[in-house]
Amino acid sequence: GEKTGLPRSYWDWQGMLSNNANGFFPYTPSTNLLYGLDEALNMLLEEGLDNVFARHNRMAEATRRAVRAWGLEILCLDPEEYSPVLTAVLMPEGQDADALRAVILDRFDMSLGTGLGKVKGKVFRIGHLGDFNDLMLAGTLAGVEMGLGLAGVPHAKGGLDAALEYLANPDAAEGVGSQPARASA
Image 1 (cartoon, one colour):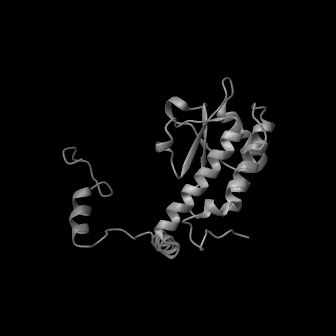
Image 2 (tube, helix red, strand yellow):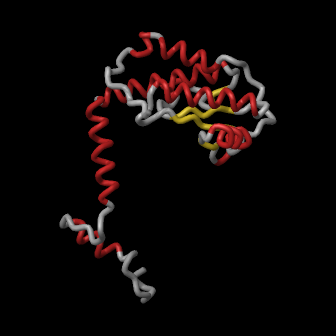
Image 3 (tube, one colour):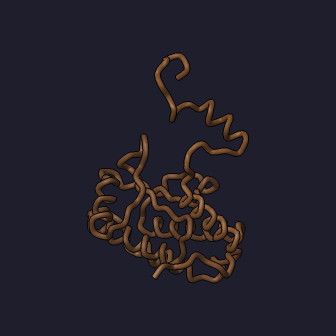
């Protein structure tokens, strides 16, 4: 930057930082993103943060029950460290997670997360966060279960059923408010 003597405008952080300290943003703000942020915050406040957290925990537990019923392993070994927003599923030895993801994307137009770093090709990730409800999770888990079969991945049937049984249990909804995420029609 400063020592190159090259013309700079976009990367001149000093001017941007000093103007921002006075509440001025030097470029046209992305108003559509600000409106989106406002709506997302309104949705969170409407449901209530405690209910949002409880819903995410409930979706995560239903997902983990499906994974266990399939006879697959959850990458995280310590249940105290399970994520309420994402479940990483370890593929059986000799199976390629990215090949499974490709089958599911091609057949069901559903995208699963990839393994990163050392676990690339060894795990796939199921997200269960955001404006997400029981029916959305059921569709996701059905897509994974069908994809496992289509990709020839050794697994037991019944993961979707295990998740649905858990979700149908009134005790699983304990702490979850009456304003679940909306299903889009």
